[in-house]
Structure formats: C-alpha cells, structure tokens
Image (cartoon, rainbow, N blue to C red):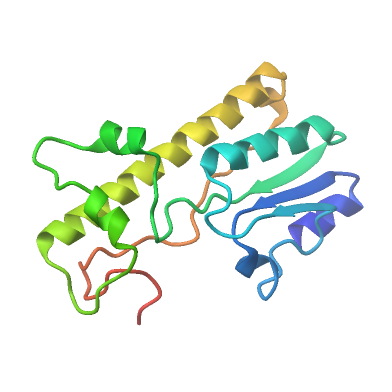
Length: 170
C-alpha cells in the first residue's frame, strides 16, 4: 500500500477513518502506524479534523495522513447551521427527513428528493469547512509549502436521476 511504501521511506503514517466497516474487510488502514477509526455517525467532520490535527501535532516529519469524512453519507445529519447556509427560499424543510429516520421503498416524490439534496449540500458544506480548518492549521504550522493535499471522494450520489436514490446500483 502507499502507507507501507512511505513507511519504508521514513514517513510517519496515520489514518483518521470514520467508518469501521472500511477498516476491516477493505483493509483501508493496512500499513498505517496509527489508525484512529470511529463507528459511522460517532465523529462528525469537525471532530474528524480535531483528530487529524492532533495526529499531525504528534507525528514526526515527514508524515502521510489520510482523513476520511463520512458526513455526506446517508443518513445525512448536518448541523442545523449548515442547512441554513445552503437552503434557498422555496426549498423544502429538511427537518421532516431528519426526523423520519428511514428510507421509504420506491421512488420518493420531488419534495423528499429535494430534502435529501439539501441535506447532502449541507453536509458537503460542513465537510468543506472542516477541511478548510485543516488547511489553515497546516498553513499556521508552516507545513503548507511542503504538503501535498489530495481531496477525493469514494463515490457520488444519485438523487433519482438514474432510477436509484443512492449509490452502488447497477
């Protein structure tokens, strides 16, 4: 793995992961010296960044760190202030979807799809702010000029554009 290769080259390696399911079967943390994982929904984007910063503060240099944010995955539960940031006039209230707790079978109506899109956008904004805080920390520590930052996603979401309301469908 990349972590094993970098470890063999003298890097300190760590992973902050927010879904235990990907650390076991998929061996995402293979080769990392430090692996901090949490069950999904147990650590939000801000707490994930707190953990990542704590790991960087303790790491010897050079270091390789992977950080996994889970917040945009279903069930989406963004902090309410992020819903307010992305909600436009006329958007449906997402709070009914938050209270519902489960997915309905079959294709939902436009209002329910609108709620899911709004919650997804609020979660993305929350993650964006958390990553921004991590980048600011790297800058404050003078690490920005010697840090390669790669931001990627594990998948996108379908909001019934292709006959499914999730991901992973054929």
